[in-house]
Image (cartoon, rainbow, N blue to C red; front, side, top):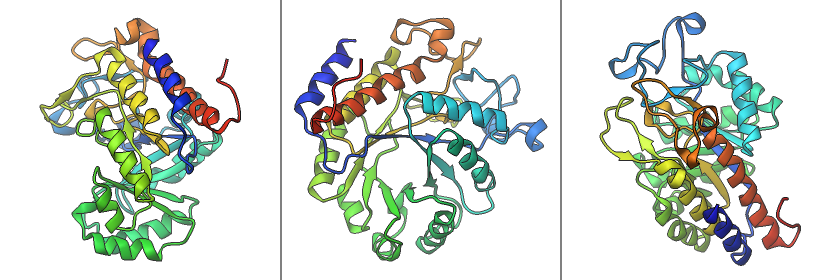
Length: 329
């Protein structure tokens, strides 16, 4: 509570960016499959795991081993996301014809039913080039998507990105995943986001957003609860959740850095242990028990509930700085 109060006080004295949109976005993964819905397990089984009793995650989903094709699951997830104060989902997308591409219209429909904006996270799919990405953006824009997050843009020549971005329609916005503002500037991107909550911690946000503002770019830093991909990918690196302390610190830094949009890594990337989707206590798996002192069913939803607190504070900080309203009661 002291951390939250200090964030509010900080928001009172730090003016909001002129380009602030008061939005919070969460990275969303529509890639999970089950035999009944999809003809086989997808992603739950990676790295040799054997669902339904053994999955590629250090945590166990409270809603069970689900399919991203299930309309009831999608509807329930979008309801949770909206109730947490998140207004945008950034859908992981792995190229045309991929499972994520096939499911995108269904995700758009479920998100739209909850009033959520849908953006696309263009992943480094096999054969991705700047030219293919431009074609992807134009095709996806026709579906009503106007914001695109490009993961690992430095894999391809920045000069080619610059040419692409100069040619896109005026209502399209493209963000670069990087901690180096100069890269985004050379690529003529509209702004930066970090995504990687292990590499880019709370301490990196003030520098990143200050440099982005100085360069005339948007700053969308990514907050997250922690990182643990040992079961999902074998990565031995761990960023502990510290009972919710990691999430709180990143949120506080994002607000104090005058983020234009706060991005959350992630709603449901279970492989890397960055998810805020509810998790159940299960033998052999980690849980959210102890987060903010909570246990059991309350702990299972702890990250969603605390996201709602932080999204409210983020919006309030902008409203106060603009002099258009008091803190919510």
